[in-house]
Image (cartoon, rainbow, N blue to C red; front, side):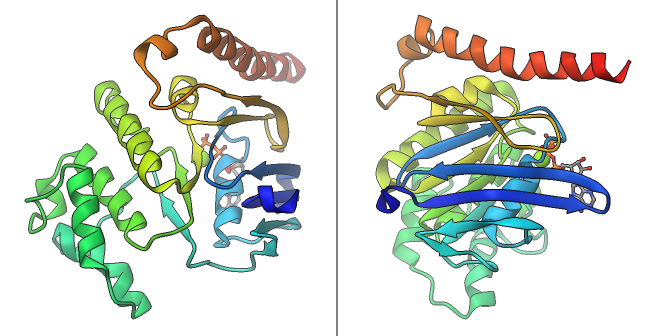
Length: 257
Ligand SMILES: Nc1ncnc2c1ncn2[C@@H]1O[C@H](COP(=O)(O)OP(=O)(O)OP(=O)(O)O)[C@@H](O)[C@H]1O
Ligand SMILES: [Mg+2]
């Protein structure tokens, strides 16, 4: 069954000093799937994502990409954060080209132009970040990540700073991009609605130290219509995931009393 797993986290543990951020956390991400990770604030989601990227090591356990252990940053893995992190002194195109310069790699200009068109940024190539809205900056950071053609895209609350309408647009954009590229995506969010709209699987983590509490399959076809998203199955899943998360924090608060 190894061929069915693109990214595997096995018994991940991460200690910061005396504190366990992750403990015995294991999950599988199937190739070409979208997996969302939700859980209470501070439960270790970002820690987990960084370990998947190879940028931060684990204290115990391992992360496998295509069956091989990740020991450092990997060219096959792209990252998108809550902040777009564009360089303010470079225009949009030069921001997208920056990783290619760092890696001494030749950019595929045709692919970049296609991605810019896909996300509605054609014509803004010469604009500087302060001339772009928050949503446009975030779209640019998605293009920057995808221009390198990663087989895995890791996204840490990429739309958390955007207003609700822009966020919905961005969710549709990710869905469209996924339907075209089938890039494997791991997506961290605090929005259960967003998780259910985008994912094949939602993983709920426990409060710190984070490990997997529950995993929910989301079997709806794509594109996911408003009818699907307003349906009883989505309602039921939302309820169960909320019960997982809020039930936990309430129990935590009681334990602290
Ligand atoms: N570099 C670090 N040094 C020490 N402690 C850290 C470090 N990074 C994270 N932590 C701690 O590890 C725990 C998990 O942090 P992490 O950022 O992974 O949580 P999170 O689930 O992403 O939270 P949020 O939902 O608020 O983004 C937190 O208690 C945090 O304070
Ligand atoms: Mg985080």
